[in-house]
Length: 123
Image 1 (cartoon, rainbow, N blue to C red):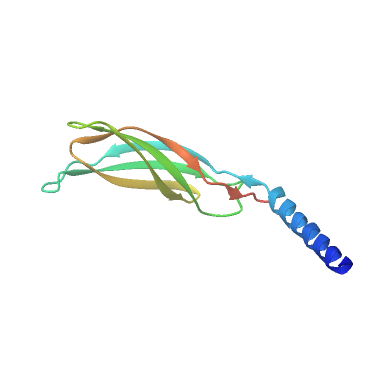
Image 2 (cartoon, rainbow, N blue to C red):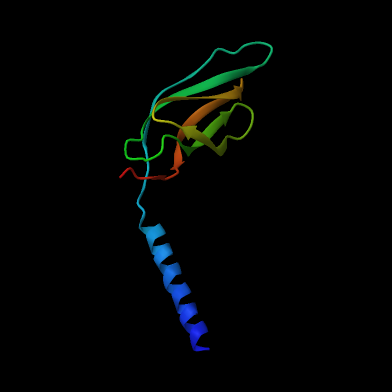
């Protein structure tokens, strides 16, 4: 009984040491900035336009060279209620470009970064 109690305590101590080490690792987030957004002209017969946004990422604090983030879109619709949705994209350092297709009766009324997933910090 005494030996199993000591083994149990050792497992608890090792588990706590592992958890505290994992929690002590610092997480960072890259800095993002939107620089340009525009629509392409509509091309028939598709009745869609391509919305493109250009943004920069400063990931100098991150130990990785790629990650993900989410954008909250507010889309205005001509003949229906406006809609909001969140979509996740990938980033890499420096300049990035995202393109999305929208119907001719839709327009991006607003967009903003909803969440930037953390990255391990550079040491």
